[in-house]
Structure formats: C-alpha cells, structure tokens
Length: 196
Image (cartoon, rainbow, N blue to C red):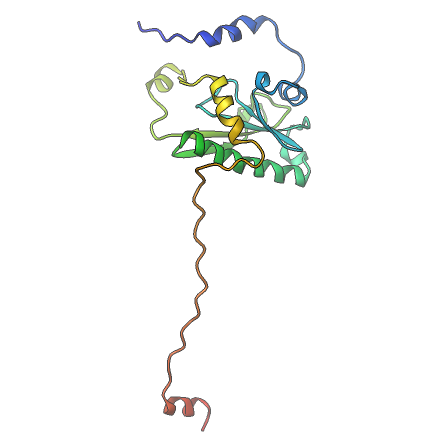
C-alpha cells in the first residue's frame, strides 16, 4: 500500500474535539488576521476567502458580510458587488493558474449540498481538463498539490484593489455596425421608381 503524507492536516485532525461556536463565515468577516482566516480580498458588502477544504488549487468563496441564508434576502447593491468580485476572482485565477475552465456555483440548503446552511456563499473553482483522476473516482479523495498558505500569498496580490492581472478572458467581439450598401440604380430604374 502506498501512502500520501499530508502533515499540514494534523492541525485540523487535532482540532476536531474543540469546535468553535457560531458561524465560521461571520468569524472570518469580523476577524483582523486575514492570513489566518484565509481572507484574500474584502469589499464593502462581501469578502473573498479560500476554501479550507478545496476541491482544487485556488478554490475561492465569495461571502456576504451579513449572515443571510439566501441571495433572495440580499440588497441589489450587495448582489452586484458579489458579481464584480466574481469577475475579479476569475481574472486572478486565470492569471495565477491558467485553468481551462472555472465553475461558479451556490448550494442553498442542506439537501442541495450546503456545508454551511445559514450563510450563503458563491464558490469559484478553477478547473483543468483531467483534474478528476483515479484518487477522486476510486478513493473519494482529492489531492491538492499546493498549500493554502502558498495559495493565499499567490492570490492576495492579484485580488488587491487596482491589481492588473496579466491574463484576462477574451471578450467576445461585438459585430461591427456595417452600412448596407445600396444597389446602384441606372437612370432608367430611378425614373421608374419615382413614378415618371
């Protein structure tokens, strides 16, 4: 039997007996130490945090500062900021990891797979062709080759206000407005059309 060593998980396994009360997202929103809380960016109504148990490298979550169970309860301006942050996250992930795709998604309610039911959040997950391998399929295990601390350092600067990311998604070209060429009419055709 082969073994995969993951010494960074010891702190999590050892802390299983001491569960903190309250909402993990609310604690992170109030927290002062962004690095310890894995917060990589803050907006007025939302913040961006690394998923502590990521599906892939760079797995981000955009979380409202308010403790709300559904985006249906949020203000319009708050929802607008969430999408602006989603675009910033996409650009940062493309610059840092060059994924071939990105998943955006929410799980609202326990039956939908929400790990934290009372505080909605948007997942932003970079994807690559073939990122699901035998470990996931056969052993129900994900192998994430980058530590959360490295991911935090990599994405923090890319998500800073005003950061210009080297790689962005190509915007679809807008069709150019073209004038429709009028067919040239002969003198005879013009006279006929004018009723002469």
